[in-house]
Amino acid sequence: MILLTIAIILAFFCTRQLWTSYDFASSQEIVFLCGNLVSSVFLVIAGIYYVYITRGLKKNKEMDDEDYVLNTLERKMYHASYFVLTALIIGFISVATGFMYFRNDQPEIVLFSFIITMFSLFFFISNSKVDSLTFPNFKAPDPQSKTPIADTLEYYDDGQKYLLLKALYKLYFLILTLMVFLIFGLMYYSVFTGNNQTVSIIGIGVILLISLLIFTSSLMPQKLQKNEDA
Image (cartoon, rainbow, N blue to C red; front, side, top):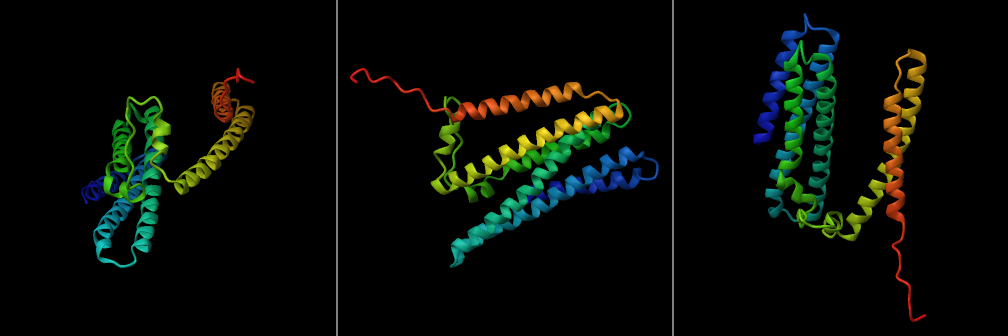
């Protein structure tokens, strides 16, 4: 409920800022103010989902069809995550681009985007009751562990591991495909506008290369010790 209240306050201030600045603000400022408003509204929607889920978990003890209720609440949790992550990314983009355009003239726009971004991040990681719905036995790995990824995967059952592997596999190839299209898009943008994007193209190419090398090396079988008795 506290997170929802803060999200409503942020949405109110974003609406007030847009309303008072609409008549004299530039088109770029209006776009950023609308981005802040959309992010705050998404956080409000996510907060409503979280309140619904929290109350549902309390009532679940009194219901007979536990599996159906938990499945419904889990799906609601993922819907809430969609809104929080969208708000987080919009806020992050607004901070990065707003710093370039408004750091001198309208620093309050960048500051508000930064506040929304930090709150979105806190929103995403703070609600332990909601997180326990999906992974009730999950524990954070030991920070001193040499194999944190393997330790984390130990808390997943076989079904969860399959879903995670399937999702990551799709995401990996989707990102690679989008990066390739982005390189070609920047190439044509450089040709037709005269605004050279060589550094961006090289940077994306390096990230693409590193991603491919890491993925390929992770599939390589481990070296076996030679059997001296053979």
